[in-house]
Image (cartoon, rainbow, N blue to C red; front, side, top):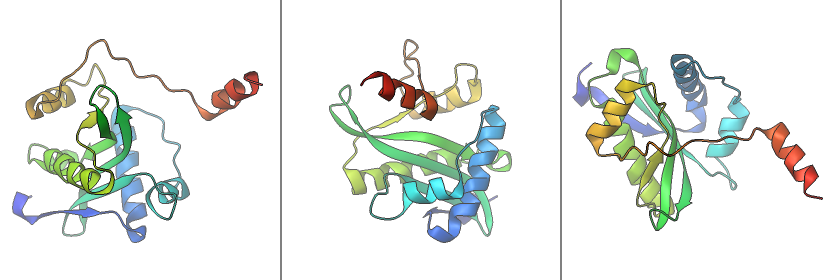
Length: 163
């Protein structure tokens, strides 16, 4: 792949299936569960209650990368930041700056939409290539920071217990 042939584009409604394939590939690469549906993704990206952005990297008709992100308020950063929940680059396109270009484009789009000034993401401790990639880009990896997730069924139980 020639880097000059690469196009980064905002995901439209017609691109949801391509985005789903990319996100599922990321989940397989990381051995993570994947529960999102096309409807879930569409609700997050489009319409009056949308709250996320997604970009695809393409060379011709082939998707070579994807990013999914949403804004958050960071007290550490002193304002809005863009949380990159998913960044995937096809194995055939790695070492060609696709991931960097996706992050750059996402940061620009986040700034435009939500005035974000920083990027935040989570990287698995045992994913040495990803950690090295983020280190080269200047991300500060916080070794004491742990990610925590409470799934919907447990959120419901938490809410019930609050009454």
